[in-house]
Length: 561
Image (cartoon, rainbow, N blue to C red):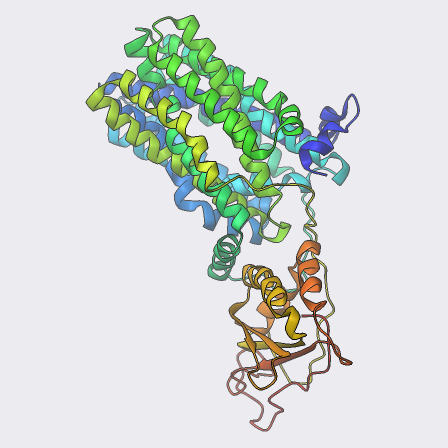
């Protein structure tokens, strides 16, 4: 059962159940204020840029400055979220965003803000948000019990949309009455409640039986997992394309308010509120859409609806009509991104959840950041109406991408790993001993050779995404029934992580391949140390005890890999 389906089964007050838990309630309410402050600041920054320059390119770059850090920092941020105390990481991230917002307030108060300084400080604020995002999403399960998790995920997603339906309008009022400096100051102040809520959170850490991965290894593990996960790669490509094309509506909205509707900061704030209110409506209808449509059909529906909304915004000269179009755009925009998010979350196990979500955020935010710059540049050359019309046509054509990269089917995921006992070892090893070479010997009847080879391709993918490298499958030319699977792991600890990361569904693939094995003896597993001299130490930094140690572990038949 998926998270969304679980949410549908909750009782009448199920959606509010997580709010009964003090930690989640404090963090959620403070997060709502923080999101509202960020949106108020975004109105002030965008409008301040329109007052400093008439260039649509520079106005659109405000959105790029905030979202680009997510693309640049995604994988390191995801690795940090998976490796370290999420409470501490969140506090440091908020400190960076608070410092950027405070500096922006001070420079604006002193009337020293220039277009480039505004972009630079928006980038600093965006960097703090980018570092926090994977940690924020990964920490929900630590604040509520498992039975309240689906509702907590839904509430967390709705927080931003609720803020987006109110924050921009408030931002327009604040900027119109007190100026952009007030919006920057309010943003900084509204970070403080969230910092306080996280500070008093008494987080209980769950220690792992294996040492934490090194930072560079953790990043490599995340990249390797995604690279060997076809479902996640498809979602990343589709989300980036959606961000590239649809980012025009967010980046050019200040220009729409100023040039097409001839309005001011309040008009811009009202347009953003219409978009945000549509997002809330869209979030409420996501369970119904997922019940009635497949993932691909739902994304196609969202893309076509978004294209029609972009056409209406481009051609409209009436604020009411534009607001109605933005209401539709906000609803389908949110639906599309939640569908992408569900696709990633249901395709990644917990040990790499932060890095997978970070990659998704990088793809989506990178698309929006690059698209914002591109649409702003096009608007400078051809005008905002032409830019929006081109964006609308491309969005209407984007469902054709599904013919090549259809959205993966998502359902219940066996995300909990099947933990195995450590193998018997007679050689003195340390965690850094390695590389380890694993050989698994099968006997397969010749008439099943092709089916076995096909099954091993799926085994290859999950071995590699869980930490193995140099994978191969070989067949004995003198004994065609004999097959040998071979792969490497960098160190002994890496091997222990690799063999315990496989989920139940991955173990099922392994069992399917092993079912082809025939003969009186079970599948044989051999684990060997490739560089025994210089790798075996009785302490981490002490040379080998003796070169007469046993070099290879005498392997016994073993079905665990």
